[in-house]
Length: 119
Image (tube, rainbow, N blue to C red; front, side, top):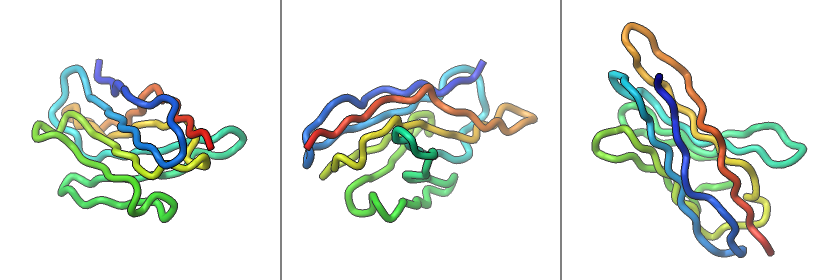
């Protein structure tokens, strides 16, 4: 069974940094695309950043210049580096990936990890 396992997150003061990682585990052909989303209390889940199969990245305006996404050479782990964190970045962060499990392409979500930024 293929799953996404997130790690990282935690509590940090405003202006600080945190990193999240998302590892695809199980048997699969490849990961086609990645994404990080977040959901704050009382709000809908929103896009944070994505990375396409060719490495093209896209960021929400609210995180541009502060957050950076990357992946490992094996393309099985996806990272979110967050800096200059603000209290409004507080949310549960979810990893999303399109994983090729031949002959299908699965859309998977991680379990979510809490990021709390204190003022």
